[in-house]
Length: 222
Image (cartoon, rainbow, N blue to C red; front, side):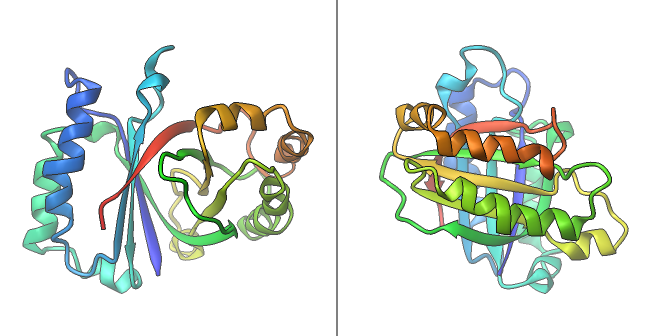
């Protein structure tokens, strides 16, 4: 399967609470009608993430399809048109971005009921090939991140190589997704030597200074 990750900010003037409610109820019902959708997850930025200002995104949606042909088949359908038409009711269109990805499960594990989900939007190191970047991320950096004891699950979503082959430059080269039992567990991870080793490896394959992060609550829709 392939996964489309969509990230965005809410409509100006709309409260975070109203945005989250609309997205999880009204909009979710419309998205669920898309032909060929296999799985649909919403990740809502935690309300605590707004205490120090606006986060980079108010959330991210993950949508799984059998293949890219199933995604392309949505073009021109009334269901896809309905999704796009409804977005103006709660999203700021100028902030919407997306990447089509292949998912790699680095650390399998059950997701705790009240888990905190961390999404890091990754860009490859300048001058590094996409092939080398993806290999380092998956084979070298992945095991480092997986070694952090309090990480309950760890998934890497790599932007598909076909995107680069088409001549396009994606917004990000992937998203690193980790689940923790709680925000306290996440904070605890930063004190661990395994975490320090993971962070120390980042300059070897990602662009420093460009690693947007949102801490979220996951909602399984489909």
